[in-house]
Image 1 (cartoon, rainbow, N blue to C red):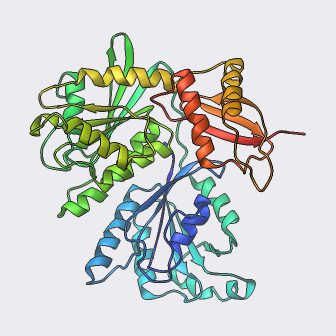
Image 2: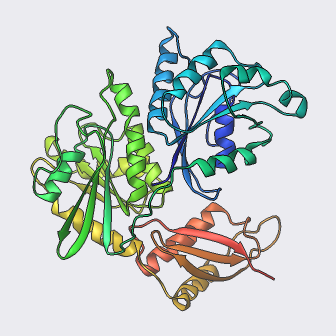
Length: 437
């Protein structure tokens, strides 16, 4: 499991700017208006010695009657609860305020490593004016400027050292790990029970019945599998809106440990934004994905029903055109047998290796049939391609202009590899590198 780092603090102290700095790209919306970040934002960070999951939060106001600020505070509390390590950001220009003191007192009680940051410290003069922050009882204060990348490198060296030391689990390549992910109450637990053939997890129409991820090993047709049933939420909430927000972190945790993600969609409700968020994390993590449309038996259907639903999925999930789509009913068992058949198929592709000679033959044919567009007025030349990894299949392409490949041409090359080698149900990773002199 990757460590989880949560960024918390009052509104407008620079949390999202720090988030973008650590992720290495502009993923969070940044604005001078307090409260721009209203929900938690997640990203997998692989730029440092140890990969980790980073969580950005909305502003944390300890005491407020504002409904929006109350919801943002609840999201921050949940992020703190889920995190292994916390970055508490304060405004180095404004100095500490009573609200900061209240949050510091609360963080002392969580029993987790907390790093206290004074952000917006752009120079030595500002850094020398930070003595007031020590009145909060903080032992170590980290002056940083997220905007100008000042002090961030030194901070991350200490953060990496503080990550929890976890035992490495044995990687058994013969076991296929399947994460069952989706919003609360789409039928994940019922689906797990139906696949296993017995009541392994509690299934209940009340959202939030499943509290923790549950792993169950089983054998099907001589093959070993582990099913990971994910919690829809961590605890019961009072509103549907709140329930929807709690499903993402559990999905993230399970996706990180899985080979294949079953993205469960409620046929009665269709595709909603939360479905696309969860599927997006599976795609970014490089996992094979299968859409499982559950509760299909409850709909009144005609000859166009399946086609219309497929069109909706393909429209909302344009980044997953390769993912199979299955229509099932966990309640009746309709088409449940198709799921493990499809898992076996995509897993074979997910683990497939192709010889370098075959790769270069197909690659040469693809480049000859359709040349890459010019980049900065120069012709793009390709030298050769080689496979460097599996799960997902990952290829390195050597070229004279690794930064000049348009995404449409990258997609074209990926599609040619899919067609030639049967990679129809797995993500592919194409990496472009310059040829060493």
